[in-house]
Length: 392
View 1 (cartoon, one colour):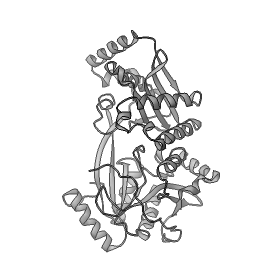
View 2 (cartoon, rainbow, N blue to C red):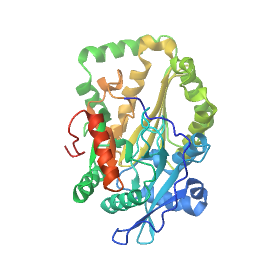
View 3 (cartoon, rainbow, N blue to C red):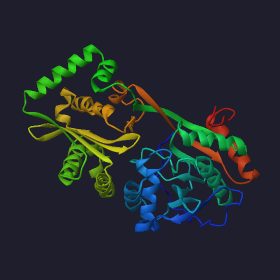
View 4 (cartoon, helix red, strand yellow):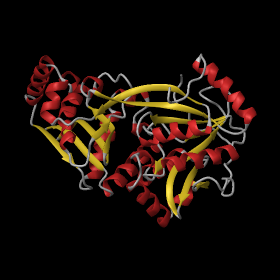
């Protein structure tokens, strides 16, 4: 199946303040995302991120707002805001799509992009069931031309997934996981040294020691680890240049290949650092970066956001040498796991990180009976068998 498509031109979502039935606990409203630029709205958003059931840095204010400014110039996305007991208890960007991975099937979906590696809504801890009920009440009342709701880059475990399974079952609402994959994850009680020895064969460890020694013969090797704002701008400049110098630059997929993604990276990195959410790691040769890694810290988890290495030194495996240093996150207070944000079967990280996180795309029935019957046929055709729910 093709990757998630960029948003196409579509009619604006209505403000459905009065659409949710009174029986629903809490209410979802669709608002222009620009409304969340206001200081008081951002403060409530940041407070929600601190008490959410599952962390998702890509939907926090310091990352999502720069993403929308850079990648939603026509303001097609709307922000679904879930209020309960008088306070913000849930947030998810949503867009109407006219096509579904090349097919002419209009639908609603959470707004994600190529540099957004998780689509989990931010939901206050304890409000997971109420959020899904309110969201489905809103989508049923505001389906428009949409045939179904599609949630991309969703973890297939955790409290939000468990609540989703429960609410779908209690409502008899059809759904299906249309794509499932497992990506590398770091989650262990072992320390850095013990994990490395358990995960990597003795032969490979010996080879890495040899490569480090050979690299050291070219100059002084240093490893820098920073989690504050000091020196952030030159670090960003180095990273963008390093990534652009390799195959991504040649393919036009580097962050610096496009002004929009370059600006997003700069603003998001600054926002993360200002909130203590950023860790920067670099392997340097005579002061120049050979490999670099930016990670987002969102206790109890972390996310390996972006990595780059100098391809001129590929024979020394600089990326693996840097990841060996990155295993220190296992001993960091408050961080229990790290999501690699890497594609499934990634040739480097899959052989170093032993744990896996299931992530997928979920399609869900919305609206009335006729719409749901059509969705059943579409889901059946996509899965190639009798559709199974997400708990199957």
